[in-house]
Image (cartoon, rainbow, N blue to C red; front, top):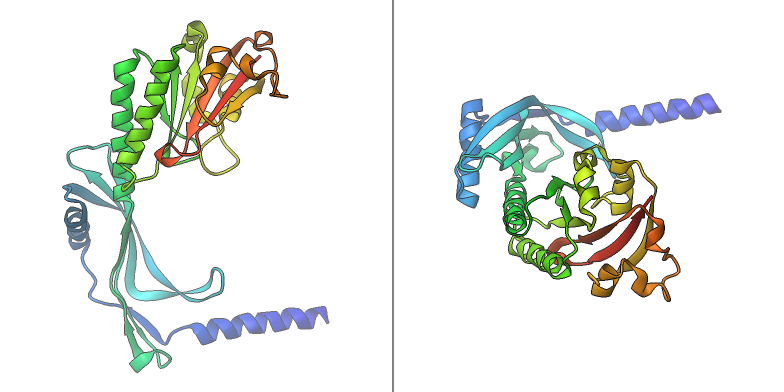
Amino acid sequence: MKKVKILLILIGIFFISGCNKYDKVKVYNPLSEKEIISYVEEEIYNNYGDLTTAKIISKDVLKICTFGIDTCSFYQDVDGGHSYKIEITNKDNKEIIATATYNDAYIIYDERVANGRFKTDVYFENDYLKQKGLILVKNEFQDILNQKFSNYYMYKDVSNPEGYDIFINSEDYNLINDLLLSFKDITIKYNNYVFTDYSVYIYKDEEVFKSTDFDLYLNGTEDHGGQSYGKDMIEQYTGREVTRIGFSHQFDYDLFVSNGASSQEINSEYIDYNTFSYLVFWCSAGPNGNNLSFQIFGVK
C-alpha cells in the first residue's frame, strides 16, 4: 500500500506539471542591456526627479509560475526571456544605492488563455524611494547629533533594514529629550519615503562610554524580526550579564535621573542600581516616534 501511495503521488505531480505547462512562452520585444539601463534611469527620473546611474549586476533566464497554491510549485522558462537584477546609484549622493528587478515582456501561447494568446508588459520594481528616505533620515539624524554631541556612534540596525541605532553619552535629560523629539519630527517628515525605527543607547558614565567598542554591535544578531532589542545587543557587544531594572512608555524624567529608583515601590523587577557596574538607558521608537519604549539595563 505504501508503494502504491508513493506511485499515485508521483503520477499526480507529473499530471499537474504536464497539464499546467503552457504550449509556448516566448519573449516579446526584448530590450538590449544598454536600453534596459536607459529605461531604468528614465523611470527613476520620471517618478522621483533624480538623476541616477544604473548597472546590471546579474542576468538570469526568466521563469514564470505555472502552478502553485500558497507558493509556486512549477515554473516554465520563457524562451529568450531574461530577468535582471540592477543597482541604482544617485548621481548627486552616492550613498543612495537602490536595487531593482527588470523582467522582459513575454507572450503565452496556449488554447487555455483567451484567444490563445496572452501578452504581458515588462516588469519593473525597485526600492529607490525607500533607500533615498533612509539616507535622508540618517543625514538629518547626524546633523542633529553633531549639534548636540562631540562624540557619538550611529549604525544601521542589525535586524531591521529600516532602523538605526545611536549610542550617546549624556546625563542631561532635557538634551536627550530634545534629541528624541527631533528624531520623531525627522521620521515624520520622511514617512512618505520610508517608515524608520530608531533606538538610542544612553550612557551616563563617560569612562565606560569611551572604553566601549561599539563597533562590536555590528557583529550582533537578533532572532526576531524588526528593531533589535537593547538588552540582547548590550549582552553581545559587551559580553556581560545584563538585567532590566526599569521600564516606561515614555522617556520618564524621574526614572532617568533616579536610575530607576523612583519606581522601586511599584516595579517588581527593580534591583538597586548600585549593585551593577554601570547602567545603559535605552529608548526605542517605531515609525513617526510611535510605541516609544524606555528601559534601564544594569550591566555587571
